[in-house]
Length: 278
Length: 333
Image (cartoon, rainbow over the protein chains, first blue to last red):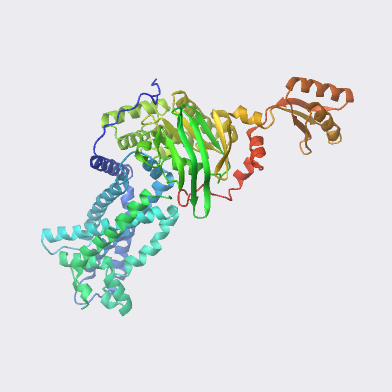
């Protein structure tokens, strides 16, 4: 039998610097997420279900009717688009994890503890990027099987995957903010209705230059298009571009967009977390 | 502010939009006691707990928890408290042990200490057998005990329990009650909110009744019951025809007005001389040849206390949570 520890005999807690705790706490949160992954590896399959089904649809059902211009084959055009779309829709997973913790009261528990206040948000960020890396490995394997190739150097290929993770990283803060704002899991699921056109009105599956002018303009400025086009360039995949300025700047915009999104949404997400319902 | 009090709040105010959740709320919880906050949904109980546990900021007022100012040093407060909210705030996918180790690490215990403390708590809350099972399969009572264990990692001076037994079956409730009693006997100060009157009655050393964001009265459970008129003499009849005459007898003996419950065929009144009144009423009724189903003395329930103090029954307001002032926007599902 163990006697209850009375409040008199305090449990000693080492007093380290704030920075060190911010780091340790962040790692603890990441560790928790990795445990989730180990306990239910099927989670990855579920989360990748949508991109995989849509790529099979687009390549094998619509693919034969798809003409993206020139003699480009559709698989090589669509695969980088699918990578970018998966990264873009990833914020839904972030929002879902955040809202589940909020609903179950886990967020309140964290906030009532003397842990580093930023660690919950940054820990979410780190584990979501790890998660996204795993997603990309699975997707790249599928892409290779159905005939996609990177035609450039190893470094260029690596740079392309880094840009993909950068897009995912920047949208984590959007996901955290939305997860804190919506009421429950159902409402978080409904976010998909907003996310779907955001992912589709882009260069992911069709070149914007083939869309009606006004829609094409929106698609060209979509951050997802910037990343999709930039990685097509880095992979050496077909890249049928219009002659608009924005499309010529894909590589630049694939870096600028995520930085802008992070600069806007990271502070908002952290603030919302610290001031929940006050 | 007395050092003998673990929680002191003075004039707390908090509004959500145009909704005034707390309106000059005062509280003084003696160290080492179990203190019940009793009130209907929307009375402000949860808001008070959320402010005292540093989750939200007050608009005005002062509060100290474990001697630390809530507004000035929230981190200091967080080292001294445990919080168990309305949901069992544990990770469903992890095992009980993994949950406790994770929380212990976030309380900055070393890896070895976290494991040791986890083993202690698992034993203390009778979860050792289930330690390595996923929480997903736990019963409501087990989840709550794990939830309580997570709040007790630093053996906090003050434990906040916000409606700890809501949604539990009777067995789960008694499991949680036992756990709370054990914690209190170990010296932890417990602030408990509930809208179950029997829960406040059974667990608390003192009770504050809150309504509309302020404390309307504060006493021991026995004191509260005494305050609204002490013991009651109660006569139950088999037919309605004698109700009025019996009420007259009871009233003349008790020296106060007797209340008649026509549905239950019951007459009752407060009495001070308990046994004397009982014998006298029984004898008079027997002499008058009135047939009595039941006669006896009883203490008023907290339901009656609540009705008397707020002018409306506690249970009804619980069933109709129309004024959900207790629920800060987006705070819960």
